[in-house]
Length: 459
Image (cartoon, rainbow, N blue to C red; front, side):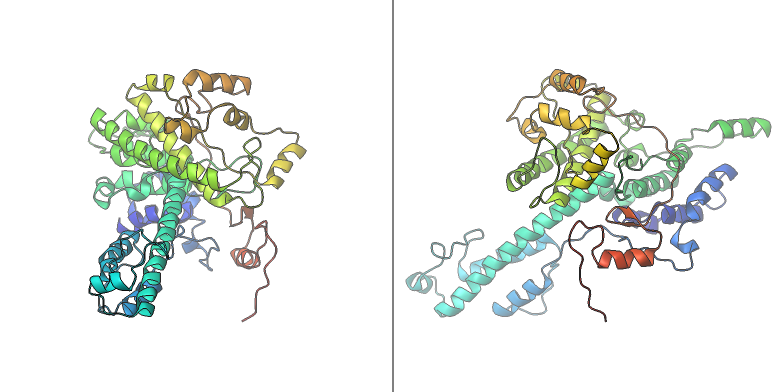
């Protein structure tokens, strides 16, 4: 179970997670369930002689401040044996706060002309160091604060990348995870499906809830398929003694579907709503900052030079994932009347110009969601109560764009179906490549990146 739990913070392929589940549930699966899992597991790295994929198995991790902390310890002549988690922004901030008083500097006061102490002030504070040494220490602390700001931003981007893919799965505690084995299997497989990378295509991305995820969900909830019902009737199998104990609270972290939320108490739903509202608040502030930093063409949402498209798209994805969960919860609590006063919309991702051109060449038009996006106030401004947007306004915008406001998820929980399992493609910047080895070479040289090719020095 420990290895399975670790996949929630990783980016394992669904095939590899299916292989782990087969091992964990050995002897507990019906034949049709086993066959379905084997369909995915046959593509696991364990089943291939090269056991290799060119795609990262971990999410992006911010670069820590180990070198910077080490140099600071040296300059301030601190105990070199002291232990500091230089990868943790909170620990780095605490470190800066603890050493700043050594030169009587307040954290955040970094102006080189206005915030430094002059000779008389240093003497008054009992500082027996030269001006040169003082300036060196001041610059070091100023640099450390700059590094901390960068770490916080990178940590924020990493967090939103994960939220955009699998919601709050990576925040699920181990104690909650292991309460029910079958629930754990569903959560890990579905999370792996959610974590699939986007493909360079105009036919839509893979949907995470496939036939295997559905089978595992029914396995943990005790719901039987038609095939299982008929088989049990034919063989007169007594299933009355089987007791299922699904952990719906844990499932709701990654799959806050109405049929899951229906099993939570109002208190649990309220806590989850508060959690997601907090996430939306954080994302709203970051989106406002990104919107200010980037000159984005709102009319088309086509990326242009200078746009930080990866950060924008991760954050937009996180907003939409959080918004879907929030929408599901207010309906589950019977609070949908809130939408008559505040109905913040989706945030559209930036599109590559060649993908948009591909759509037009295929005889398609701009995504109708873009039209809705342009007709209503910016979602983060609505959430921050700087703009007003109601359910009727969104509904009218959807109608004018030719969209069903409820079915498209603009004013109600978005329904989903069950898709067939499809093997995970080996991707290089969204383009499918048959060989992992070839994919590594293409990625190293910058193919399909939208930038110039790289010159790689031979070793």
